[in-house]
Image (cartoon, rainbow, N blue to C red; front, side):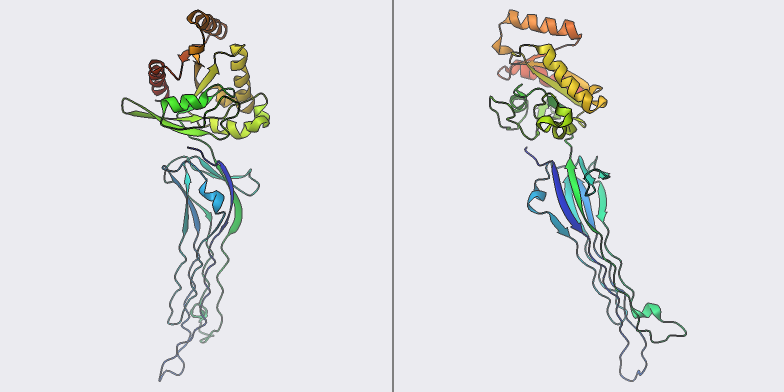
Length: 327
């Protein structure tokens, strides 16, 4: 599932309807008095989170949203109809920012959350409201107020059970394709993945969501290689699957490089549960693999899981481990 993770949109709530300056006009009633009704309230713009959405792509093609205005009041003390609220659906994990793209307004963390981002204008008063003992025939009425309008930013942070991280070309997309029904672009060159991909893995009637985070490079925490854009998706993953290409010359340095970028961006990322996976083990002899694994585990005091996306048994073993860590 490819998705757009940041959009800027313009929202305009409906204006309130104006009050009516009407007077009662009936046969045989010479002085009917004021009977102007109030204006209706303008429609508000409300954002609502939906579980079945995983992208902001719809907002690429339509960026301006306007709610209906309230109807004007009418004679016979008829209040104008309120404008309909406009509901905009967003995925869980969406954050709303002001136009500066820094001031957070709301964070959608669960399904069916709602946030009124632009409030509709108030309806104006009809002349009936201004009738008094000293003014029996007021001509005064008020117009409705304007609805709120401004530009906002929507940012989507992936919410997944497992976030797959690693250097470019470590095989993250291949792993996602092998354990889920996702169909990411796969090729043997760096930065094949330029947007996060999502997939759902099933095992024994249980499901886990995996996110293939684009490859991180040195300096990612400063924005190099779109690093900050990618790292923010890691923040909401419950567990990190650190995938390492076993054919790398220095596995320990490769591991430390990614951990350094995570820590420089946020120390919280280093506290997340971690699964280290050596990928492409089919490229090495058994003895060579054992040596690399032993050296890595003893040096860093960490356990490693072996994987080849061509080996169904190893894929099943990894699925079981993922399920245990995601629960």
